[in-house]
Image (cartoon, rainbow, N blue to C red; front, side, top):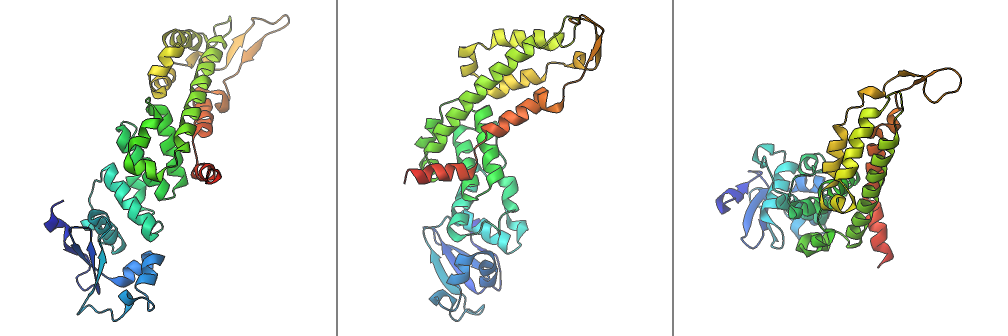
Length: 301
């Protein structure tokens, strides 16, 4: 954004002018909107603080916020003033992180709860820095479900060392370092579970032909993804190939093999034992919740 774009009367009759960042970007706002959105601003513009004295739209009170990010504060103020026409349609991961830092600082989580839903969506094809920024943003927004979704995305789609995330200034300061060791632990376990799933699928067939296609295809995948190769590719690649394997021959089927007396039917697998069902359970076990991260960090303090 150009400086001219960042200078805005968000509320033309506002009684406060925020002077934000080192560039002294001026944002005219209405104090009651900020007070309604944030307990911090509620105290700042209340009767006990100097900023809350003699508020008037004729002579707006100037409040310096020189340590804050001007773009982030502008977006936040637009949202709490219902000026959605001024909110950028697209935000980069870094911009989302900057907003989350201000949200955490001024206790604006509830006010931006619904606006943040779109911003915090995991970018499974994003670069490492972007994925780290969004993980940190979800942490600051205190969004348990989204934070877990980001950890699952990192486990499934990121194949590098998680220690590289500690090289980023913001991510390393916001996310406890133990999180990245836990991510590696969960990814290693999920790899082992995927391998076991392939082995059991290869063996899960019958002489009558039930499950033959899956058995053959899983056998080929096992041959392709030996232990070293499995370490070299994202697990999402392996899962995609597993999902492409047809299970049409695993429905209800008459069978007379392996029984001394009589015949029986193979029954379709219950959902919990299908690939989709097993993967759902595995992903749920692999995901990391915010409370787990905070408890790990608390034990080290």
